[in-house]
Structure formats: structure tokens, C-alpha cells
Length: 195
Image (cartoon, rainbow, N blue to C red):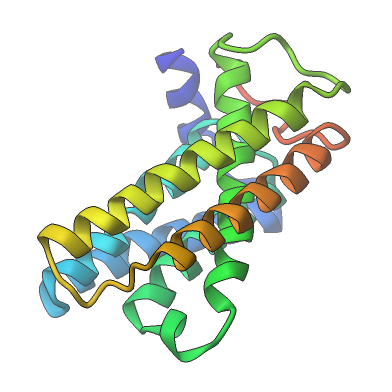
């Protein structure tokens, strides 16, 4: 599995979408490095959470458009936190939770499929069920991270019961949509190294 992840990581980009995804990935890495020396530690920590997602998308050999969407989505989600869009734009929080959780649930679906945790999905209901479950689990973990940050790091993090439940519902809906799409569309490149 490690060899396949490394092979996908080393594969040079071939299409404009693959080049764009790699450019966004590079921008995420540079952006975090700059943030680490110029922004408060909490903002740099939020931006650091984009790095595993943008690198995993490349290592799994996701289709170029899905790879690009993954990179952009996690950067928008983290950046929205840093520049405080969640408080400034009503409803933005729910939109980002739905889209980001959906994208990450689809990535989790690929990872679970590749590692044999779930049976090969093909065109069945399996992706719908697994992606929805993964999305709800990711939403719960995210809300726990928010609570931990609020409780032990800074009280500037917005945490209320309604916000938590609303975020989880939005994430579950996004994951359900991702599962439906994954049951109909391939998420990985045809020429990727098998993980």
C-alpha cells in the first residue's frame, strides 16, 4: 500500500486539471508556512489541517477534478475560519460543512475501499451508506475538535448546541450526496497505482 501511495504521489501531472490541483496543493503548503510565522498559532493550526487532506488526495490517485475539488474545499473551509467568514456570512458555516464533509466522506470512501475495509463498491448502495456514515463520523469528530478548542484553547471559537447539531446535519446531508455521486461516478484515475 505504501508503495502505491508513493507511486501516485510521484506521478507527474498530465492534464491541466492535474496541474491545477498540484498548484493549489503547493499554495496550501506555502500558505501554511507563511501562516506559521505571521499568524497567531491558532490560525496556523487551523491551516495545518489542510495539509493531510491535500496530500492524501494526491496519494490516493483521485481523478483530477475530484483532487482539485478536495484541495480547494479544505482550503476554503480552513481559510473561512481564519478570516472569520463563519461569523460574517450567515449560513456560510452550513454550506461549508455540507460541501467539505461530502468531499472528505468521498475521500474516506476511496481509502476504505482501497484498504479492503469495505468490499469493492462498484455501482451499488454501498457507497451511499458508507459515505454517509463516514461523513457523520467526520462531523462528530470535527465538532469535538471545536469543543476542545473552545474549552481548552480559546473561547473565541463559536460553540453552541444548535450550531453543533446544525453542522452535523449539514455534514450528513453533504456526505449522503457524495455517496450518491460516488455510486455513479468514478472517484479515482484509471491509471493510478492500486493502493
